[in-house]
Amino acid sequence: MRSDVARLRSGKTIPLLGMGTYCPQKDQESTISAVHQAIKIGYRHFDTAKIYGSEEALGTALGQAISYGTVQREDFYITSKLWSSDHHDPVTALRQTLKTMGLEYLDGYLVHWPIKLKPGVSDPVPKEDEFEKDLGIEETWQGMERCLEMGLCRSIGVSNFSSKKIFDLLDCASVSPSVNQVEMHPLWRQSKLRKVCEENNIHVSGYSPLGGPGNCWGSTAVIEHPVIKSIALKHNATPAQVALRWGMSKGASVIVKSFNGERMSENKRALEVKLDDQDLSFIDQLEEWKIMRGDFLVNQTTSPYKSIQQLWDGEI
Image (cartoon, rainbow, N blue to C red; front, side, top):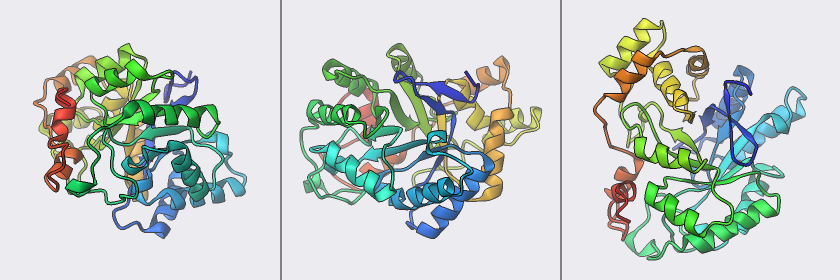
């Protein structure tokens, strides 16, 4: 098997380097252009979600690239996600996603968050009265399994699930999740969760692998950390390349978002960086920085899910 992919329990391979397509401005033309650049550079793994507003643009770019004859649909690994207000009917939600993207199937379909919103809620920062009190993961997962049975996707998984939520899901699942996509980077290494996923043959896919610089919930702390910088200097690499390669060295795929062609090429070259045991040991000793997208969200709402951090600590 190639060194730049991982094999999922479904038998499908997933490229270790993926491109995220979240765009706060929901700029369709910029997204289409960026995806075309990424394909030319060699990206074959693309990540989107209903709530990102980029499904249509990604689908358009993929359709155009395939029509040119330079790539085929089978060359790509495409992920989208079930939004929290669609838990009652994953099949209908996925069919709509496929229609929006102009695709016959997804390679991966993930439950975006272990929270359930009332039908029709589309705000990424929900109001208190828009939350359902009971997640009802068993019913939701049965719908995800139907998506798989119907051939609407090649694998099913979850996103932002803690170890406890993984165990809760495994207790009721007929088909275990292939992927758990979570925030993961050198300053938030997800050691406990990675161990649980490894023991249950669940691939970890890391978003915000650079710590989310430029985002309202992120920081430049990862790429500006002196240890990361020193390792980069040692390998004639960039701090971003070191952070990305660290995630891959843990067996994870990493979803990095940049619409800048030079940065996309730089990130792609992370596959060529070789970290040694000393590098990995130094990174594993860094003090962890536990700020994530969920913390930003709970600061904006007084929902019943009072602290997303509780999800990771296993309290809810």
